[in-house]
Image (cartoon, rainbow, N blue to C red):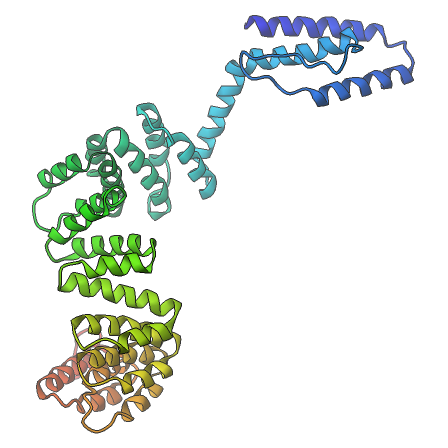
Length: 413
């Protein structure tokens, strides 16, 4: 038994005996002592390890009061390492397996703030004891990110054994963490451990690298082949620059290579501006010369405007000059509006002046109503001005109607 603990128990025993010997004292005297003791204990602060100082109210404090306070302090000192720390550990272990998500996340963060091999092993055991599925993705991200700081290659070996989404979440967090510490090593590993162009490891790498060098992360993203990985990486970087301010995002977009990446960035910028100030977004589009960038911005602005007020969006599109920008804007408005109110959308299309290329809007309306109004969809499809596109849309619509009428694939022969 700890010597300090044994001594403290002995002191309390002596005090108890002394106390029992005073039982014949008056109630008033006893109450006075308890009040005095309470007053002293209120002043008492539990000591830190190896830093015990006995607080005494004043020089008139009686020996017994001092002894009680000292005994309590010695007990605290004696059990702090033997009892208190294990209790804290048991509390943390309980939280790691808690059914309360916030309590569980707090425990994972506390355990992995300064990760080491032991903390990783404990967190791994706790994570694997949780029910599977997306309900534990937050814990997985924390575990994988911390493990990526300690031993990324071992962490990635483990991630390869996980199910699809678990594998995706884990590897992304590990590469994110590793790239913040050593991007070159992470890039080398990613290239050596994946065959093919759509290398998913680069999503995490670009995310992590952008924290230390946004220009290098951008260059790496632009070098990726066209596809989902590059698109996802571009989206991550855009969100990061947008969080630094509209001017930073605009500067970033301006300096991207011309083509699909730059058009994507401008389109995202247009949507962000439209969400905060639709009038300013419309003015921006109207001030542009017709180009692929204007088409990209028009597409996103018109979509956001239609979500907010489809009628206003429809009026704006009708006033746009002819060209690709109006076509894509017209189609986006029709897509959004026809989901809310197909009848109003049809009435809007009927208002288009003669000679207006309304085909994009008509196609969007047909695709939206061909299940709820098959005949109406066929009539609208037949009104397309482009002959080839008309034949294609009619065939698609008839196939959808047939599949809906005969879902098992049997005809009415």
